[in-house]
Image (cartoon, rainbow, N blue to C red; front, side):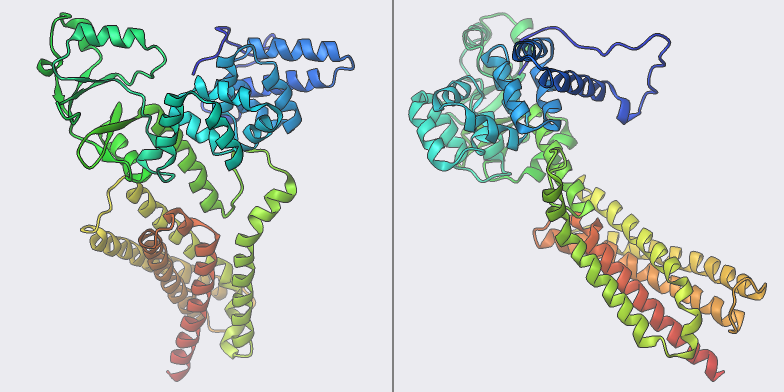
Length: 493
């Protein structure tokens, strides 16, 4: 959806102001646009005269692309977003704003406008976007809006709503161009010309007598071939197709691997029921990335939304409680062994053990999650990948265990560490502790994403606070038991 104005706003630089270094995401072109819009809007809503406020907001709504306004408006109060929406110049700009803004903004807008205005938005909106937008309305109001909608439009939207979220049936659009194989290039071109409201996917799908999907024709063929040419002579086979219940992860993998422009969705009889476009997949990948980042960070808050402090606090607390209990378990371990003679030199190296094991575990889980996301991990390769990571963990544990042990031995030997223990004993304990902790962290970082995936949980949680806390506890206890074993063996010599 494009904006109603062709004017592109580019923030002006002050004289002699240096251009931002490329690659600085805090000073990118889009972030400068957001900051400029926010500054203008804050000035407008603080005007003393309502007339000036209205004029300034109207000027902003015309000058800027509604997509930019939708993104920047998430940083202002909900009441201010309503003012901006009401001053957008036309229905197309309002549709672009509603589609590209956040769920709380849509909820606030829908509460302030009548059912007839929502109906107008839905009438001019692609069905797949309409389904996503209607998710922010309560059921009773959705029912009222459906009663006002054109019957044909309502059926198309309802057909998409019946599918589960995060599946091909919910992501696809059921407005597309598909023609019988005997139709000609000229007939197809004329039909497309007469239906400008249907999104063009760069592929013309070809159907058989029973409406089954036979193939596709690239849009370029409509230009370079004579108008009397039938589609069957230009048709190419469709290699990739999905069903309505195909999960979104599989769809993203197909688009990434085969660089698809569009992906047809078929039913059990191979009849074409919808098309997933590249734009749909990009939006879906953004949503998946936000969810993954939230899982890794251990929070349920919306990454892209400026939520109140108390709500962000509530979103983060449950995950942090896990870390709290992990710390208490570690403290319990200290209390169990504190009266052992060999334990006096052990606690000083706990930060070293947990730091090394934590980084090793995160590296293993990150590499494995990335391989799973790109389709490099399958049921036939799991065993080889797990063994590979365990070998790498063993090599890291041995090499860094020797390095840390030698460092601890040297520090004790030179008297830099105030301890009455034999430097060789301290070095051996640290060396064996690092080896054991790194191996445990490797096993946890490798197996946890696979187990989470098997249980239907996002594997990204394997890099989050839960697994990190478990890794700290396990590596610490491993270090304690290794220290106890080494000390006992050393005393028996």
